[in-house]
Image 1 (cartoon, rainbow, N blue to C red):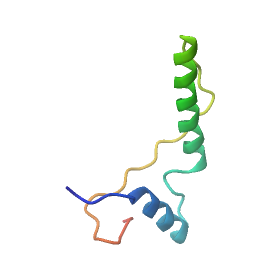
Image 2 (image 1 turned 120 degrees about the horizontal axis):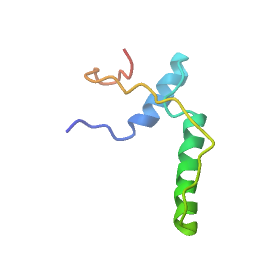
Image 3 (image 1 turned 180 degrees about the vertical axis):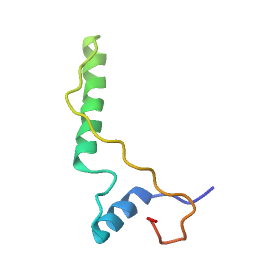
Length: 72
């Protein structure tokens, strides 16, 4: 299997160095946190919870790149 441990962190650093937006931005992080909180609340209260946040789905990491390259 391909080694991909810490690829998200490497992608973020690469994006910051090259000036492109990184895939795991603050908006996505907030949305993920809201989802986790909603699951906890829904479980405790036995009812659905409406989310107020949204985020864009980031482009996937390109496949088949040379070692040390994280973008096309």
